[in-house]
Image (cartoon, rainbow, N blue to C red; front, side, top):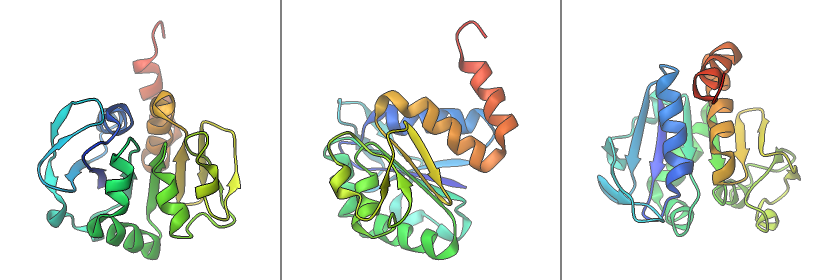
Length: 180
């Protein structure tokens, strides 16, 4: 199970592109409303989350996904449910993925020390102890980070590769690529 956490102010492309592509790859995904079932993104798109945060069963998680967006990433970081999910996934050796400004949450927790990572340009100082990368998507062990909304499809394809294998990621890439 993949849990994609949504907090008011989330970046819609960074949240919904992974949900869409993971589901195309037959990966089970649940969107999680941090402050309730209806969550409004940074650009006014309101989404009804699959479940509220109190229904997350982190023991079933293969991965959690943290989208960026302002003030979405701030709202994620201040959520006890999100902090608990991050801690438990880290302790269980499960994937933790974050895009745009959300990798700063992992940096503040010390989870990026000695790991290659990327984030929204200008926020690199918040990735405490990370080995900074200019790549659009970076996987280092069980941590996946990505730069911004423009990298959302590549981020999602990387997540598919982590969970369903590179062949499945390439199949989905071919399905969504114009002219392929």
